[in-house]
Length: 343
Image 1 (spheres, helix red, strand yellow):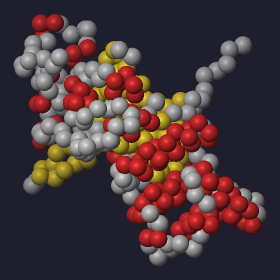
Image 2 (image 1 turned 90 degrees about the horizontal axis):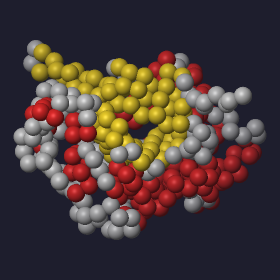
Image 3 (image 1 turned 135 degrees about the vertical axis):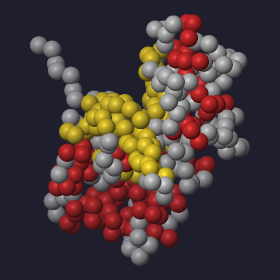
């Protein structure tokens, strides 16, 4: 008898978040996330990286996954349960036991007037992670050891008495206390210096292997995304324009936007030091609202068909790419280049 397939851990299908921006007496729709689709399986933990410029929709997507924003359209399920249909009680007692966030600024996550170990104790008690409160210090110390800390190092200390790296490690430990299956990490290393970034990224990799935790790793840093990510999604103005295994997507990018991202940094070889910040092309104001391809205004391979038509999601070269360049169903006569094609 064949075994039935396991339910996906996370299913995102044609997900959109639409905001309305008022302009005088009228308002305009702004698609922060535009028909995004991602599936993370439950039987194979992975680090799923999401990259893109500021304003690409990465954080809005993370907030929807965490139940902090309600989707305007599409499907968003965790273990086959629609996230936004969960009651407040289910969110607190089940969902946040399974799904934990790690945010960009660890100091913003902690009150400066509260000792940092109190957060860990409260999480243990609230989620009943120990049968006897006397066991809490042992359990907390056990979790802290997974992020390279001990309870003795942080006990009684306030957040401002910790380094940035220590504070972020405590934030990750707090997320691990409930033994989650999914961590949503939004720019978790962007406020740390280069030496600490790799230690945090290595920590996520170790947690995936040792604890079987999947991580949605949101970043604008292609270096750490390349190093850590098993798969990667590249976002542009709410669209996912390329999705697949990280080595394929960043090693040999197909979408012109992904190519632009890659060439804007010296290299993506692990171990190299980035000497310059990512310097991207000037963003055109109409990329959010234009009727055709959102990248058409600055694409080196723009074609006539791109001007008024939304490109399809095409499976090509081991990944999904949203681009007419790879759509074999389009009449070649319509693929007229308006500028010299990218090579």
